Image (cartoon, rainbow, N blue to C red; front, top):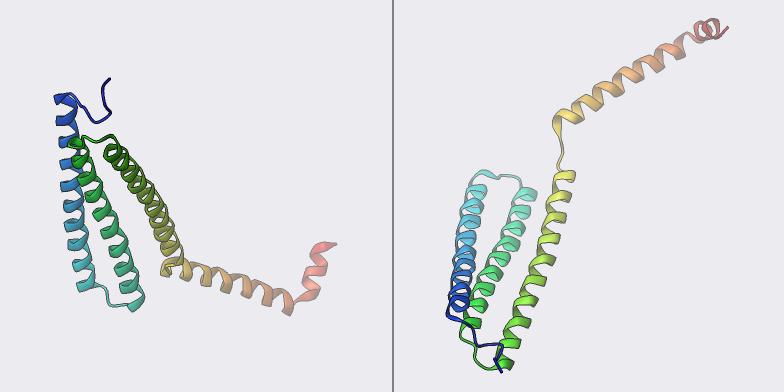
Amino acid sequence: MILLAEFSPSTTNALIVVGLGCLFGGVMLLMSHRKHWLSVLENETESRGRRYEEGKFRRRALVAALISALGTTILATAWAREPRVFALMIVLMLSIVGVLFVLASLEFLSVGVHHLAKPDAAAHKALVEKYQELRAKADEKAEFPEHDNDQQK
């Protein structure tokens, strides 16, 4: 009977490659997010924008760390010989993936809400102009009510 943890050399090599890829991918993501965060800190003057960017950096750094942890767990799985340890590693990997999905969903929600709440100066100007135009038309109708009655007949 073959144990779950007894892999062929090609499977072990695949686990090592995938594990190293996740580990270094997470580290590279963290470095990329930090570089972006530092550039935003230099340019962002509004306190609301800085708070949003700090929160975004924290969430993304957590995701990068979880990806690295997933890579480490995959690497450790390649050398797990005890079936209970192997099962524990699988449960740990599934838990990390589940947390990653939850964090990704929260990140999508956060970014969407931030962009919806962000003021758009051009759209605001267009709305004000349209309001003024409609207000002028309403005032014109109020000044000449008999003119409207002639048109309705």
